[in-house]
Length: 534
Image (tube, rainbow, N blue to C red):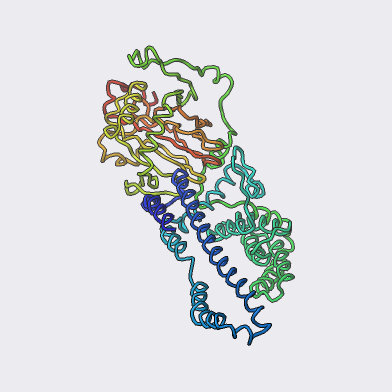
């Protein structure tokens, strides 16, 4: 038992320093080992309780035999001086020992272990964050609740199912956020699984209570009334449902009297109200963005496709790449996006990940109003920054970027390593600062972000593409490759077609690292042109 406590104490302090487990799959894997240690401790406790009960059982069986014999001839039994002595000893001493054994709490070790570990557990924010991630994946990849509940996701290795309790919890999270669209979907899924006979601690009354209100909030009064009546059939004394029933009937009667002539229009309006409303985090390009995440709506025509090539690239006769040139592939034409294949080895990836893991913290974005870094719901990942001087591998990667792009990395930002969490994403954004953000990189003193280099350090089973909604481009993660594009034209003007996003990870674990290269130092490496858009 002590061993289990010590092991957990060694494993977990690192996690304590990094709250927000749901934002990083890499750190969530630590929780798997934590739970395994808990299970081991629990099994030790069960074994201790079983050993204790076995001792009590043997004692009871022995005394059962003894008392059965003694009660047949009590006087003759205690007439034997040894029996008389042992009877006195048992009742005076041994029964007290048995009492102590029965009262002995075998759970101390397990409870101590659990108490130590609990301070490192995910919190309410993690649970809600993971629930919201499922809802986000549901919308982005057009998944119905039954598909998610059954775990029928592409590329899964370990299939898992959602219980009625799980579906109910997802519905409650949506309800708390006033997201009645998803509340309805998940409460209906919970009800469906109950109707199919699934045994659950959640009853239909609780589900119908949430469901009827969610439907009402979306404007479908007829369905809300129907669900409320169904609830009252199960629990006629339900106070809130009785109140809602009277209110719904009153509203319907009032609408019927006031709008008899416009019943058709009302019907059309009701249908519209039942549709998914505008999300709180509304993006004008969300539909386009989500389509690209699913691999739909890509705008590359066959004519343009013919102009994309693969080639060997020697970095303008760089000695490092003359004998072993880099493999280069055109991913897109405008903006020009280039992929380098086999550009980072598995060994280098492992070292970069090992360096980054202890430092991973919630990824931040530049607040355009304050100019400061802050966390945002539209960026769900954890990141760490690595300097070239702290490890030769990082320095080597920096020089590789410089050799292949021809740009000076001495003014670039440090290598940023990111690991995406449950449904991890980074919604559409620009890497460069726009004209209304003149102070975005002022503290760096190196000008705007001229270009982006992005290493893919893992394959992703499903989802996780890098998409460019303005031009309809999707670039899919492939371990060992990197993509490169210019954020600014040679004139220094921003290229707005480079607005891009990291799609939610549907299944798998996404690791990337990126290098943002800045303007300073590139004056002779990428000379300015006479046209703003060149």
